[in-house]
Length: 286
Image (cartoon, rainbow, N blue to C red):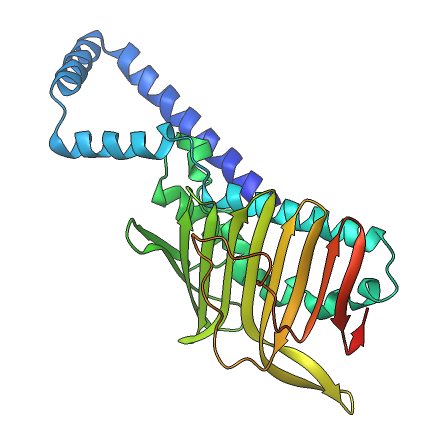
């Protein structure tokens, strides 16, 4: 976030200097100033088709008042943290120490979800989505060669190279109407993470699909494809993990799942409702 603040301040300084330069040029030449005013008047009165299209797009981006990706992701993380903090505070003898079993370790996916904290922040600077500043912010925070593109049909696509030299491709779909997001991450061409969430009444449902550690043998990690699921409404909710799955879960993008069946069949799970816990974690039922 510090790098983001530095970048934002730099942009503001650039805009301020540019504005001062234009003002000084106009003051130094009355005739030039008059011609500039006339030219600006003509452009205002007769905007080109391209300008009309750009103005229309800017209006679509700002007047709707819809969340941007980073705002939605922040809201999801805040709701998840409040729920997890509540669970920890209950000091349950099984769920407390077992919480990591049904939770994705954030450090393992940090570089994959980090761009979600930035997509859409150009609106804070210019009042509309601007792909130029978007790329500059993500290049500062994520990867120097990052390139973000946007298409109304397919969503956002981000490419870049990580510190280990892996080629990463992120595909992000976001639906502001349902407050729902889908992230697909490909590392060197292979799917490495699927992450989705959608707003529900009072909270969120979310799921992660990735290869993860499902156990140990002689202190050696045993890896397997897993699906993690989370559904919460205030302090009530469930977390679950499915081990050795054969395929990615049914998508919840844009559609709220049935809360009664969302975690059915999980290998490890817990549910808390009205302060009461039930579940089965590491073969311990409660």
